[in-house]
Image (cartoon, rainbow, N blue to C red):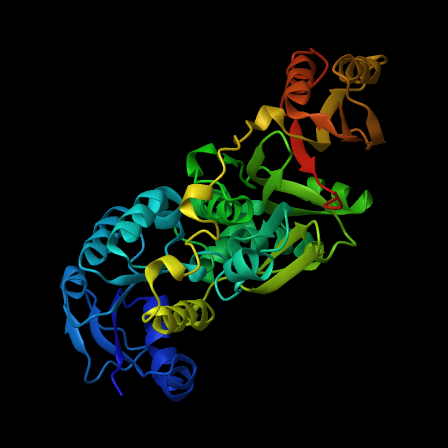
Length: 433
């Protein structure tokens, strides 16, 4: 029986995991595809002792794999965007199908890559780009295809979730836990992509496109990180019945699409609030099915390889199917993509958690509440803490309000001589509508 030949570019953590899964489960995979899957060529700067590549052709130039006429499917696992983009486009130009785990590549260059793939009659699969081993893209694009998707909310970066979990459970500060995450290998030496929301924004871009049938629009995602979260915020959230999670949220408001990544207070009783450590979870609300939750390992060699190999299997099954009869890249046919606008962050509406420090003087609190009222902001709950070095910590929960109105109110509050202008604001989502 003729085998389907796979070329793997990149032999790091995910690349080695992919080799191991393909070799270990070769018999099962062949039964599922109807043909054997053979690793024909690997492109990597160096070998990886985590996998055995004996008998496999190895090149030190990844473009040798893209130009190998024997390769049917190129698996891009080198990361980054510049070289990866050139590599993938080269392989597409040579008539090869693509599997990638590269969320930045798809989020930033996916529109271009899909157009090139369509022109050359090949497919691009990228399940592993979002939430590692959780098959969230297939669930969203196929399993929930009968639904109008109302919203998607996810913990889609394990590093940030680990930090917030440890801050809460160990009563430790952000800097201490970040250093621990780096020592354990959960965070990079430069953790910016993880803790400031860039990684999650790449993934949210992809989720939103599949959920709502809109083009990939990474540049329009609002991003806010977790580095300003304090133990005081974690404890105050708990007192109100919430937990703080770093969420990616995409909503169809009827007037436009919200795309935002930021720290969020969510009710403790929601299943998403119970997701701890480096685990990922995505919650999806569809008009027919209601809310559903997808949970699992968001990173790691074999969890991510699970998704990579599943894509290889899917493409292997489709090699005999006409390109126009296959499932579209983003779940919607290209000529049916929506031009619904992406809203700016000022136009979103949600509840807010506010933490501010005010002078211990009569009338200060009245000034704050008057400014909130002037900007159509109603208070749901308020707690006044003990005086700390002459300042009184105040924590306020508000009802839903337009962000633009909240920004104006906070600007006026920060201008008061009696208020410390370092005001903490965290958005609140109940995820029930």
